[in-house]
Amino acid sequence: MNKDFYCVIMAGGIGARFWPMSRSHSPKQFIDILDDGTSLIQKTFARFTEICPKENIYIITNQMYAEQVKQQLPDLTDEQIVLEPARRNTAPCIAYANYKIKAKNPNAVVVVAPSDHVILKEDVFKEVILNGLNFVKDNRKLLTIGIRPSCPNTGYGYIQYDEDRSYGGSSIYDVKIFTEKPELEVAKQFVESGEFLWNAGIFMWSLSEIESAFEEFLPEVNDLFKQGEGLYNTSAESSFVKATYLVCKNISIDYGIMEHAKNVCVYAADFGWSDLGTWGALYDISEKDDDKNVVMGNKVKTYNSNGCIINVPKNKAVVLQGMEDYIVVDNDNVLLICKKDNEQQIRQYVNDVQIDFGDKYI
Image (cartoon, rainbow, N blue to C red; front, side, top):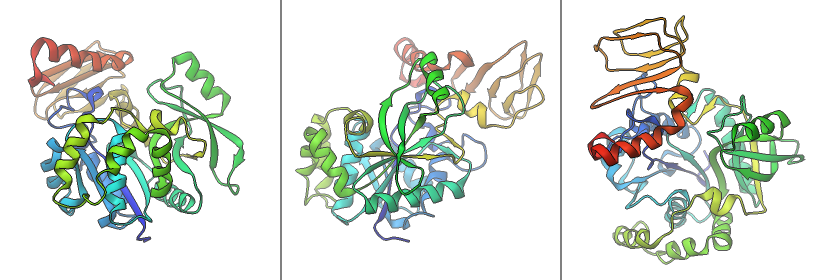
């Protein structure tokens, strides 16, 4: 393995659209959501041990999840668990990780990936990431992964690529524009054009190139973290980072850098990807019964019900009658019954429940 290849796994989100299974105290990346014995973050970590040295893999997460990371990934050292004192979106998260890695290896080439995605074709994924890391090692580019769309999904961002500007006959192209979560009619046009890819939120770059991009497009973020040079990987790091996050702006890497930089490329790929962002996404990739229901629970009876995803505690007897295309989730002190078509409103439901009933339900 190339000792200069590093991985940053982002694991600080709360997965609100997967409520009520995903909660603020135990978000979806730490849950065995596929019911196969391992959590999503464990799958992600194992995936990247095939790509870069284990000691070069960093988990960046909120400090409230430190113990869960240690418990689920016991092979990690404390230095590899990077703790954010507050949520400030992906750009500050990445800037922090950049400087921490730079203190060890300024020649690092980094892949940044979410902790909660599903990859069905692991071998293809490994090939794509290794190809991408070698590409950014040799080219002054910022690279993102684009997934060929199978439907006009409005829950994903889209990337328009320039088919006439590829690199060495590969599946890597220059990017024209990014579009965040379009309306359905626009998404249909994107898919029909054949010029757009889903934005998978996976990035690759050399440390030097992403630092240059931060200096140009997000200097206010970069300058904050740059002040900590000499403190990273020391006992002074924690207090410096706490002070930095108090004043750091909240902004995504897509909006802050990728949408503005002129040297952005996209790798068009198909490795059985799902961001598993919603119950509908889980339904799509799960095994279904004869009535096209996805059932997680061993004492569930359905009558005249089809197209539903049902997640209930094992050994809890549940009867569903006359339901079509519903999400039914019973978890701890919350029961959710929601049409699949309305799942994008779950964030609003979470907010309303928190306001009316309190934090213990979210």
